[in-house]
Amino acid sequence: MIIGVGEKANTKSTMNFGTHNGIFHCDEVVGIATLEIAYMQTDIYVVRTRDFKELKKLNIVIDIGGGMFDHHMSGFDVCRTTGEKYASAGLVWREFGEEAIKNVMIEEDISIEDDEIKTIKEQIDKEVIIPVDMEDNGEKITSHTFSFIPKFLPSWLETQDYDRAFGRVEEIVFDILKAIIKDKVVQVATRKELQNRYDRIN
Image (cartoon, rainbow, N blue to C red; front, side, top):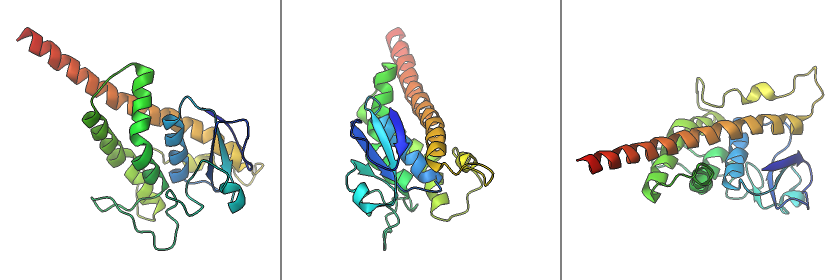
């Protein structure tokens, strides 16, 4: 659970996740939401800064910092086998997608097989995450599940509190992404149960 958003690491939280400050984009909001689901039972603080000394203090940093979840590094050209280039959302989903799915399974008290979890991970990547990555990488996308995210950016008439706006929209993205995962897991579990009943009858 995210307990706050700010510029400095919070020593009272179990985990500190980082991204850049200022204007936010769909890919890092979706990436942080994925991490929150993957660490659902953990107190998380989100640090939004461009101070590299501060970023080095954090547990996981995305979309900045030059680490494994930063697609802005010079020469970065990591692509899926289907050809789509990764952005931060996809890099985080690739690493933490299965853990996010398992946490939703635990919350819903549903059990499915590892190969089914991998299939769900691939489906969500294709249907939800890839369009977010493509948009951030400058490819033309008409719309996607999280196209609404920029609407939460403060207007010039408002106080420019990007951290507060980020926290508000991330909470919504968290709920939507978790619901998408739940729907996929329930579908698989329902099909299995119906097949088991059919097998018992026959």
